[in-house]
Image (cartoon, rainbow, N blue to C red):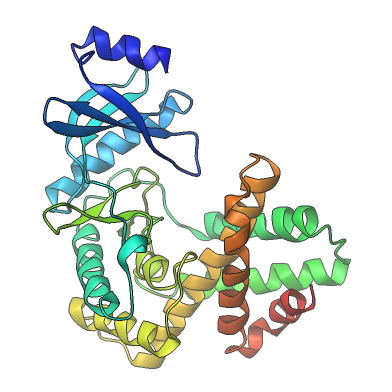
Length: 311
């Protein structure tokens, strides 16, 4: 905190008060600054300075296609500090309910469509190697380290074959679009003006058409009726004018969700075991439920589903 206060004094912001706003799953911290009658957010990435240039760059790319991202007021890339426009404290997760979720999700889906028009030049691809790399986190961190399971050679081969199948189906769908990667209820805000505000986009890649859609609709932090989720998924398909039948699109959507949730099982376990963050353990059961329920629809995934049911 002393380093932050010294920087604020250096840039003439020493008359502003500072309080903790939030922390995220990485090594970034956020503070709310109050200066005269205005508030701002200070992003402290000093422990992860390399994440700041991508944030600034993705902020600009998304602004260009009119996605509502926070304006950058002051930046110091070397120290790892940004002062940002304050979107307030209302995340989607705070306000979603049975009465408003359909309307709010449609607004969030409309933002996906805008995001997918953003420039993808130079972004790393969600290719097969990376899809598999992410899913491999489940075996290492969730099954072997968190659950302390010793997998047989047969089980390992079954997992490998299943993950290959999932990656192949993911790659069948349209590719080459801007992917936020963490587009869910904790990273979507309702600004004081009622706009959909998008945050935490610095890890963007270029990938499949359904990635951000499944992040949004099969959120690891909140669950909705499966039929409603499918209706909203098809709303997206129709909104972008994609000429593909319902069954094919839902299969793409399902397999993209499997890829993401299998990865997330590994990430939540790693956050606990490696980084000492136990807050995500409570979200593991819903994530497992997504994998088991979705995987059960497809006979080719029976091996993985059986394994997850048995542990």
